[in-house]
Length: 108
Image (cartoon, rainbow, N blue to C red; front, top):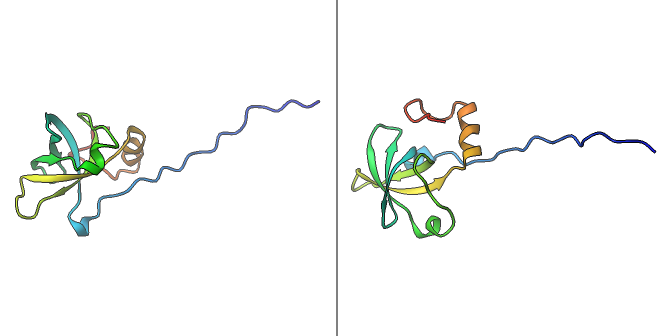
């Protein structure tokens, strides 16, 4: 009878979407929850915007202060934006290790 050691843990491959700069998407960090599915977001271009959580995201994931987001600013009103995606803490730390997050937003 042979004894086997602990199984080797395979490293998980974290696949996380990047902002599509061609469509105007950028990184952002949730600053303040305002209620009524609105969030104040600090974007990578240095502008603080009012972020709107669409129903597609509102029903599936909770967004808290300090979460890393993908934000798409409105073309006709640059002080507002739609939230397209929320990164988990694991995905945010992965992006931090790969240096994909801009320096002014990197709090991870």
